[in-house]
Length: 395
Image 1 (cartoon, rainbow, N blue to C red):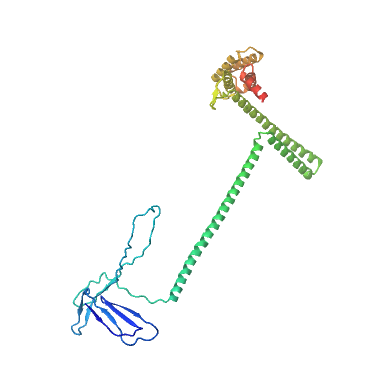
Image 2 (tube, one colour):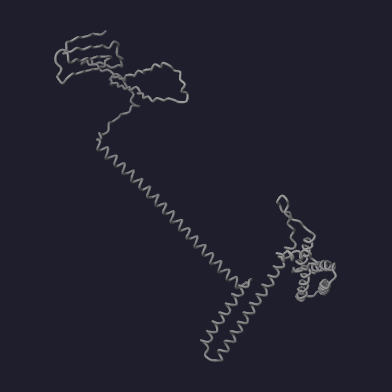
């Protein structure tokens, strides 16, 4: 039911009040700055439906009613735009629109009653905190910012310290490695120098020994001239120095002789190994094939005989077997060299049959090995040796 109340009002001013569903909306329009006077016209719309009953109770003594409260925001209506035509040829472009929505906000409360028991086990009591002003909030935020900056600066400083520490440790490790490498090089060089003096192998090593011996002799001569009190004592000390020098020279010559023997044996072994190696032929597909020729086979057999002839620590049976094999090999040729080798083989076999000591056969065996080496290196008996000589001379 709608009741309308008409009042008079000035021509320049009017006021309209509308009450709908228990909620009042007032629209006031003023024209000019004058105050409202005279009659007004109001339109009142009474809420037609009954309000939602949430419950409550009434005090019998005072007659006051205590009702449970309930509120809800007004739902917004969605306006659907009328589309004249939904057909379109724009299939490559996607049109998007952003819309914002608001959820319904509901709240409610219920008063306590004496005749009703409520379970408050799951209830949460909210106690308001002290009111904080804007300045207090800024001060608190500034303190938090200072704390964050302090931790961040400490983290940055620790990172820088760790980088510097890593650089320093790396540099220290490199210095230690360099020091260790230098020490090892010095020890290796010192060991080589000592080894050059105890076991000289090359001409430079013997020159170092001779130069050091000459330096030692000069130093001893100066010491004798300074400490000798008389001519006789100086002559005696000089003779002792000369004897020491002769002894040292003899040792150096012995070392040189041993080294020459060793170097000669190694040189001969390398030469014989090179002669007995198979030929390497390059195939059409790029691979290399090892080919055994009759000359390389002959050189390999002579090399094995020479190594057996030079080996030591053989028994009498093994030695006789080696001598018979060499005699059979050299008897294939008739010349002065082969006859001398055969005579030496017969002489050594005769002395072995007589059980002579091996020390008495050193000279005989050395002469036999040298003659057989001439036989092996001769191109007439070892054709591969002649080819190797021609190749080396051509190169």
